[in-house]
Amino acid sequence: MEKINFTSVKNNRMETKTKTGLKGGEFIIKESNAQDIFIPEEFNEEQQMMIATARDFLTKEVNSIHDRIDAQEPGLMVSLLDKAGELGLLGIAVPEEFGGLGKDFLTGMLITEVLGAGHSFSVSMAAHTGIGTLPILYFGTKAQKDKYLPLLANGKWKASYCLTEPGSGSDALAAKTKAVLSDDKKFYILNGQKMWITNAGFADLFIVFAQVDGDKFTGFIIEKTAPGLSLGEEEHKMGIKGSSTRQVFFSDCKVPVENVLGEIGKGHLIAFNILNIGRAKLAAATLGGCKKVCSLSISYANQREQFKLPISKFGAIRHKLAEQAIKTFVLESALYRVSSMIDDKEKEMLAAGMDFSRSLLKAAEEYAVECAILKVAGSETLDFVVDEGVQVYGGYGYSSEFPMDRAYRDSRINRIFEGTNEINRLLVVDMILKRAMKGELDLMTAATNVQKELMGIPEFSNGNNELFTAEKKAITEMKKAILMVAGAAVQKFMMTLAKEQEILMNIADMAIDIFLSESVMLRVQKLVDPQGEPSCATKLDMMRVFISNANERVAFNGRTAINSFAEGDEQRMMLLGLKRFTKYGPINTKEARRRIAKELIDANEYCF
Ligand SMILES: Cc1cc2nc3c(=O)[nH]c(=O)nc-3n(C[C@H](O)[C@H](O)[C@H](O)COP(=O)(O)OP(=O)(O)OC[C@H]3O[C@@H](n4cnc5c(N)ncnc54)[C@H](O)[C@@H]3O)c2cc1C
Image (cartoon, rainbow, N blue to C red; front, side, top):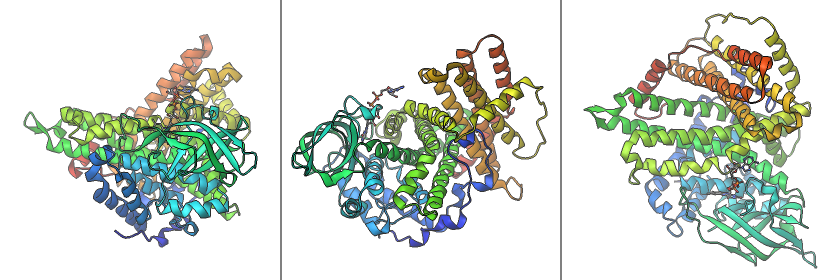
C-alpha cells in the first residue's frame, strides 16, 4: 500500500460549507435549518477514497490478527502503528509543514470512524494521534513542534498521555505528581506516579501533568529515555487487551525546562481542551464499531437457522437488527453535524486571522456541550449494539471463538475514559448553565416564555400533515419540556443545584435525546429536500422510531425530575405541561422496524 496522497481533498469543506450560525449549547433554545447542516451522504469522492484506504488497511493488516494483538505479541502493535504511519494515517490532522497530511477536522473524524472498528489497534492509534500528539500540536512551542511532530506524524515515535493517577481520575486536577525546578534552573525534577496509561509499554514520548510548586498544574513532554522514568507491569484488563496499559513512575525524573508544555500552571487548559476533541473522536470511533457489529449481527442472523428458518425471519430478531441500525444512524447524524460545526467554526476563525493552533481548540471549546453529548451517545450506542449483537449470536455470542465476545468486552471502556459518562452528563448541564450565567445563552427568556405558555390555553392543533411537521413540532416541544424542568430546578435549588446530581442526570438525558432527535430529523429532511419526495422511506422510518422513543424518554426523565423536587399545584401544572410537550405520534414502530430490518436483511450488512 502506498502513502495517502489526497491533497485535493484538503479544502473540500470550503466548497460545500454552510453555516449553522448556532453557538455551543444553543440547540436547546433555537431551531436549526436542514440546509445548514452537513450530512454524511455529502462526503465527496476523494473522501470516499480515503475511507477505502483506511478500510483496506484494517482488513489487510489488522482484522485477521486480533488474537495475536490481544495476546500482546511482542512488537506487533508497534509494527502496525509503523505501517499506519507509513500510509499517512497517523498524521491526518498534522499540518504538512510538520510531516502530516494537514486534513480538516471533518476528514479526520471520518478516518477515525473507519479505523474505530479495529478494536485494540484503534485504541492505541487514537491515544497516539489524539491525546498523545494533539497537546504538542496545539500547545507546543515552534521548537517542540519541529522536533516532535514529524516523528509522531510518521509513526517513528509513539506517544502516550499521562493524566490519571491512582488517587485522581475524574478529579484529574487533584494529581499529586510533583515537579520542582532544579537549582541550576535547567530541569524540572518530577516525582510521582501515573496510572492506566495507554501505549505506555512502547511509547517514546509521554505527555505528563504534574504540580509545579505544589499547586501549579502543568504539562510536560517527557522522552522515554529521561532518567528516573520507569514503567509498571501490563494491566490485566476486561477488554482492549491488545492495547498496552501500564503505570508510569517518576523518581527524580529530570525533564529539561524547554520541555514544559504550555505555561506553568496552565496544564488544565491542555487537559480539558484536548478532552473536547477527544470526546468527539471517541464518538467517531464508536460509530465505526457500531457499523461493524451491525453488519456482523445481520449476516449471522441471515445464516443461522433455528426451527428450520433463518433467525432473521423472527420478529424479535428483526426488532434488534432494526434498533441497532436506528441508533447507529442517529449517532452518525449527530456526529457529523457537530464535526462540521466545529470545522466551520475553525475555518471561520482561521479566516479571521486566528492562528492554526488556537482555532481548532477554540472551535472545539465552543461546542464542548455537543462534544460531551457525542461522547455519552457514542459509548452508550456501541454498548447497546454489542449487547444485542451477543444476543443475536446466542451461545456463540458468548464464545471467544466468535467476534461478539471481543466486541462486547472492548466496547465497555468507552463509558469510562475521556471523562466517565457521569462526568460528561454533569458537564452537559453545567456548561449550558454557565453559558446562560455569562449571558451567552438566553435561557431565561426561553424558560420564561415556556412558563407563560403553561399558564395559557393549550394549542391542540397538530398543524398540517406535511412531511416533518409532526417531528419539528415534537422537537420544539421537547425543548420546551427541558426548559420547563431545568428552569424550575434552577429556581428551586439555585446554587445548590450541583448537589442534585440525580436531577442533573435527568436533564442531561433530556438534552441528549433532544440533540439526537433534531440531528436525525435534519439529516433526513436534507435528504428529502428540496423535491419534498420521500426517496428515502426507510430513513424516515428510522427517524420516526427514534423520535418516538426519545419523546417517551424525555417524558420519563422530565417526570422523574419534577416528582423529585416539585409539590402540590406546581407539580400538577408541570406534569400537565410535560404531557403537553411530549405528544408525538402514535407511530406504528413495529411495522417501521420491520421495514428497516427488511432492508438490512436484504443487504446482508449495515446499509445506511
Ligand atoms: C483501559 C484504560 C485506559 C486508560 N487510558 C488512559 C490514558 O491513556 N491516560 C490517562 O491519563 N488516563 C487513562 N485512563 C484513565 C481514565 O481516564 C480514568 O479511569 C477515568 O477518568 C475515571 O477515573 P477513575 O478510574 O479514577 O474513576 P473515578 O474518578 O474514581 O470514578 C469512579 C466512579 O465514580 C464516578 N464519579 C467520580 N466523580 C464523580 C462526581 N463528581 N460525580 C458523580 N460521579 C462521579 C465516576 O463516574 C465513576 O462511575 C484509562 C483507563 C482505562 C481503564
